[in-house]
Image (tube, rainbow, N blue to C red):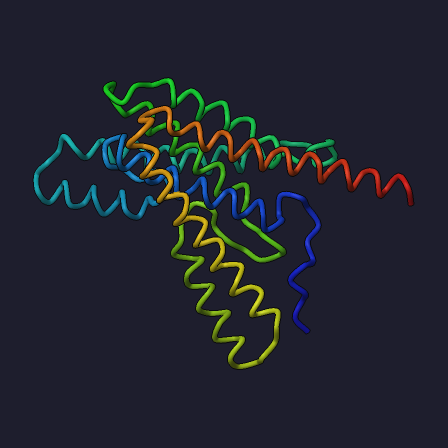
Length: 233
């Protein structure tokens, strides 16, 4: 029997958190592409393709622009796994929750770095943030998703739509809609990133800090609510 859509155990696995993180993912991709040397913060496939094009065209000076975020993303995944294995799961806040303050601090620092300066440092920081986020937050309502890219979400949306057609089970409708909402939030983030980058330039990334702060506060409030319920039982 299929599990119900609303079954989830951890506050950071709520749909609203997934939507906020997807917004940040889309926003960061637009920000780095438009303002930071036309690289993608999240979509390393795109960076690999652009690197291959640069190699084929003999533009060796551009290769490093794409190698840096790719390598940083890879190292960010490794570091996240290391932290996950070292952290004590019995802490008041799960280790995933502490990712939010780290992201906020790093992205705030990026906003202080002018667009006229070399972009290598910024791309390292943003790619690291994206790697940590995608590796830390991988589930919404017991369903896997990606907050920093859309290919897997698009595939899962189509898969669940077909399962809905075959089985008529509402759980697949819920999952299909979840993926559609996450993709829409990613697109909204990319659109806002495009619009605001043209107005506030490097400081436009602070919008992501605000969104991440909202997500973090939601999790804190939810944790306290759960603690109060447990104390009453």
